[in-house]
Figure 1 (cartoon, each protein chain N blue to C red):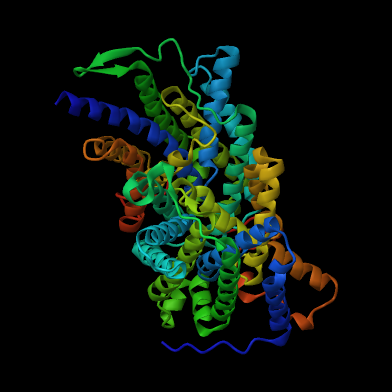
Figure 2 (cartoon, one colour; figure 1 turned 135 degrees about the vertical axis):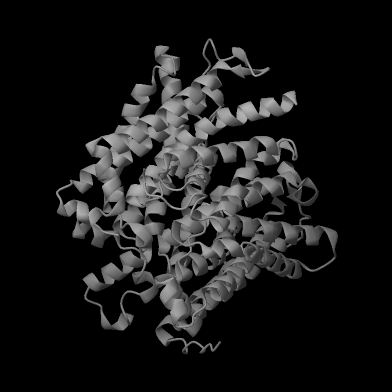
Length: 291
Length: 342
């Protein structure tokens, strides 16, 4: 029973991280209809950025969140202006945008290999090994902090989408970009900002995972696929749906340890991805557009 | 189902092709072993790339998981070679069939289109890699399988590779020109419209996926025999899946000549980069992908067509841009049109 509670607690904590990863991917797909395959690369980039700031400047990973947000937002906006803008969107542009963003990912990975070598790294802080008792088991401080941030982010995102002009414009464009142009919304600017926000979320997710797991330049591939599972399962842009979907994925993954060798648990996510796509391509809660 | 046979091969395509095949068949008389090894590898990659192209180019279902088929073919062939006295070609065919059946197992994913299909294939591919690496009884786990080295095997495999490549080039051409090719084009252009006029996307996609998987599986079998050592993380690796995509993108997705050129360029480039700049080769593939998608989505074939038209050669090339190729995305048009609706 104690083991059961342990697993349940770690599933909840993991779910927070998965949700953070998925919001960025879902936002970009919902608005631009582009699957950002570079998402995994940006997650990896965020991890290294946090690591560098911690290593060189001694900056606490949680304090470097704003820096990571700004840098990855800038990177995303640039990526949109320079590359993605020139691609056809929607069904016609599927393979083209996939392949292009995949190329971006390869370049990011290669850059990371050159800069940091292929060795595994981890952000280790003074409180990395500390844990506090909770529900009869011990929970690492780090994981709790990550969960906390993972709760703040969707709330902030929800408020942004619901309460600001920018959010309204983003939601409107997701529904019909042409009409937005007609009523004077600067669609290109909103696309740039949306892409930036999406990659910023990926960067933060990378930073958060770097405090929990070891990473190397190939890091992010599994995270991309898990984000995709969560996005598809949770429905596009639905903040609550994404949270629930992340929880489902985390629970299935964590409890798979009970029935199969630990080496195969990472295959669970991939199998779930295929099952979800095939059985519930519209998500668990039906398709909703950003809100 | 009525399939009209493809029209006879036009002489201006058949003659250079026949000349190239004869030259390649005589090449072992004059070339050194290193070059012949590269050629053999190129033959295998040409076959794999063309088979990928049947799915990715003809039907428009871009697969990021073909390494799974390559691996299944390779390991089934290797196991048969180790466990039975069957001659190698039979084991390759068996490996191919096994890969084809494996591809049919992925049937449910064929309901998906565009990015959804691509992402699902990443999932299938990675899951297959993990499972087969874990399944030590079959694949030897992370330490792989060694095959007995046959005397004169590499020389023989040069010709087997050439034969396979020729066969697959011919099949690609036939597939492209037959009614079946048109039906695939219809599915690629618009699934719903195709089914309205009686082209069953489910049936044809299964058929092509099976064929594509079988050929990639046979290629995997030859690859196993050729290197006499295979290892699941290499055979099933994500990098291998990408290599099929890359070869076709470099050469020109959806064409017959494109993947052939792409595979040759890929093999040479890889050899050169691994020898001289091993730390850059991933990034260079990335840059290639970006540049090609942005500026010439048809790759080398598109470049060739553009040059041809620039030089005023119009009539002799037949209908200029191949219809299959023309329906792949054209970013340039989107860029010119400014704001793009969906």
